[in-house]
Amino acid sequence: MRTKELIEQIFKKKSFLCVGLDTDLEKIPTYLLSEKDPVFTFNKAIIDATHQYCVAYKPNIAFYEAMGLDGWKALEKTINYLHSEYPDLYTIADAKRGDIGNTSRMYAKTFLKDLGFDSVTVAPYMGKDSVEPFLEFTDKHTILLALTSNDGASDFQILKTEGEELYKKVIKTSKSWKNSENLMYVIGATKAEYLSEIRKIIPENFLLVPGVGAQGGSLEEVCKYGITKDVGLLVNSSRKIIYASDAPNFAEIAAARAEALQQQMAAELEKLKS
Ligand SMILES: O=c1ccn([C@@H]2O[C@H](COP(=O)(O)O)[C@@H](O)[C@H]2O)c(=O)[nH]1
Image 1: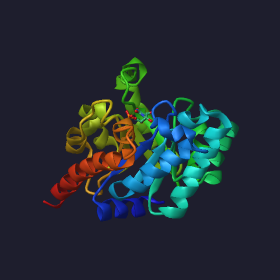
Image 2 (image 1 turned 90 degrees about the horizontal axis):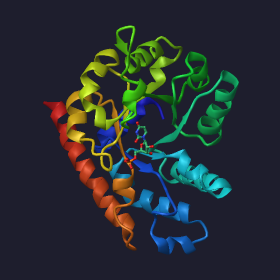
Image 3 (image 1 turned 180 degrees about the vertical axis):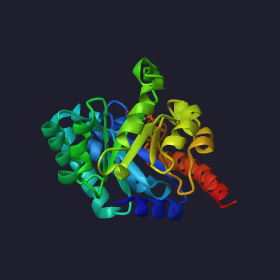
């Protein structure tokens, strides 16, 4: 899905919520474990219950890889289900890849072509030639880790190099890369105070903002400093939504959590009109 269609979906659904599918066999309702494919069964229930409140889903690939072949099969079934049942929803492979060019080409093929995700998260630290193979998919987005939500972001990302924080250098340099209009950037919700500075450098690119919910980031703060006239935000919440309950009606309770966030987002979108 291209940026224009994503923006249309956001205004149509009055939501810029991304639901994270960090599906963990130790956290899903135990009664599902007797199912043939518990991961897909769980994902399908969450998707069917929450799709009206969100515009995107973000499976975190680590959770699927950790289950071996069964995990990859469940991931493939989940993305195929999204494509067939809900083709208007945007999909993000949260894979955090990036390597020398020929290896990145394989990662890009896996997530953007074979599995057909709309976007993939990429670590920028190996530089231009490690990101270019992803950017060659011009109908997709490459989402660069810029300023992450974790405490360790301060180890490198906000360190000054030549008078400027490293994350800013990453963002500024990436703007010169071919097809950079297809870049989005990960900025943690826990780092909302940096958003006005970031918006000066990238006033238009979409930001993927994780960290609302379980990590304590504030949706209000993110919108205050990061929203643009075209919204420019996909705000992710994973555990707070998908593990809201382990009762048989877990999906319904997850949907209520998603709806509460969507309502807050609708109010933020309303403010854009004034
Ligand atoms: O800076 C980052 C980059 C990625 N993530 C990922 O987003 C979700 C957040 O999950 P919650 O349960 O809502 O905390 C998870 O998949 C992370 O790997 C991030 O949190 N921060």
